[in-house]
Length: 284
Image 1 (cartoon, rainbow, N blue to C red):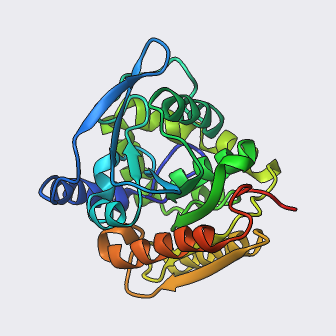
Image 2 (cartoon, rainbow, N blue to C red):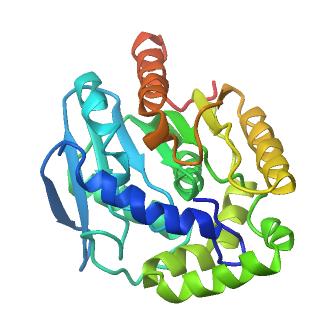
Image 3 (tube, rainbow, N blue to C red):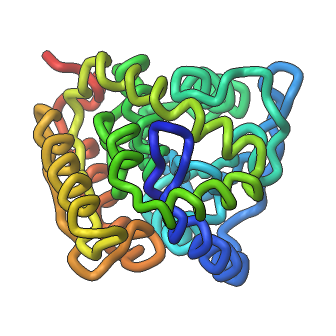
């Protein structure tokens, strides 16, 4: 969903998500999940398939691993794939760690280590999840062989959209915040800090595919801002490429899961054919 730096969210995405999650619940189950202790609390992890690199799926703010149910089954045929619930969401325990990208990256690294899910990784992040995987790639460059950003939040977006809200949207936002889970609110409230950390982090030199939605989620001014920042984000990576998905809204993994799978396949294949397989995130 399109998150705001002030801790809000575009309201029509909040209400639409209720229906989307209900649909995800009836999607084919990809694999059993397990809860992994990462130091006094447990995170819910689902993995399936075999092969390298391992694909790690990172959901948007407030979303659970089920948001990937249309993508997971096809990716597991290609290589090993894992999705998880961030702390306080889905079947994962609450966490004492701040719900910013910095804390989430630390938890993800601990989860993969404790679960013995060894890299290299292709990291796939939707919306707020894009900030998390970009920071993970900056903090652990040698473990990352590529990124797929699924209509990911650009680091310069949080905070700008609040000024573009109409009074009615602002009131809907206030109401929605009163209904939101605590972990979701914490992720939204930490959005500005998360974006700031990504802004000063070194962009990965690994291949990056930026999938950008083509259908408008807001008014023309909001849409223009999102589109321009998506383009700028894609150009910030030395090996980045943008794909505009004309017939999809923000949840590309629901509207066009085939294109998300295609992007993952491209990055996985690129690593498998690369002579630099021993150093996936190297900038040499």
